[in-house]
Image 1 (cartoon, rainbow, N blue to C red):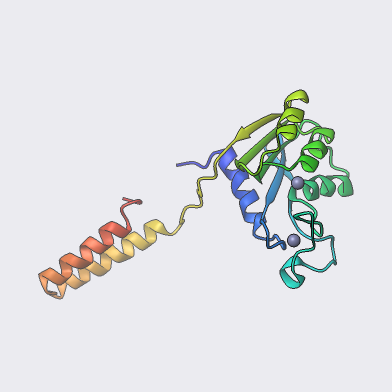
Image 2 (image 1 turned 30 degrees about the horizontal axis):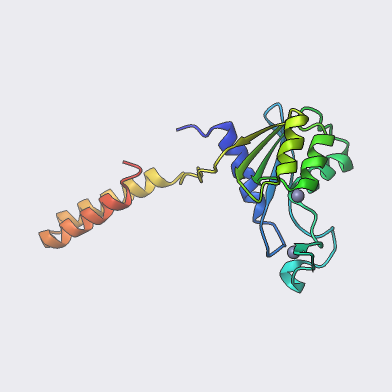
Length: 188
Ligand SMILES: [Zn+2]
Ligand SMILES: [Zn+2]
């Protein structure tokens, strides 16, 4: 089972969302060009600023104004280091807000892959359409597989065989076998 590109980039966005410092929503964004990651961002304060996670959110009109959104951070990282975003694609954990939508269009992003709908603003949808920016819903399927699964399965099988060799009570042994079977059902 080889990981698809979509799921790989979506996994990156979900991973970096864990760096978010805003308690209201953790968002991650990954900008990709020619199947290469060129930038990534999460929603958080400006560099060196205080964090919502420490001081609480700074809310005005129902929005936290302290943070820079993940998409914006990713685009700004490109600006900072002089990386072109023309014709690039972005993978985001949540559908972009109106401000980010406009920034992405203006930065020349051509495709927006999003895992979750999030208050999808009708005007953002309209602007994306007018700018011919494709928005594609790609639900994240938590594809991170356990690379040690086979080792664990082999180890448990050896343990069960050793127990059998020790003449363990057959009812007890059966329970252990069933437990192992349920646990490894996915891998088998
Ligand atoms: Zn906040
Ligand atoms: Zn935004």
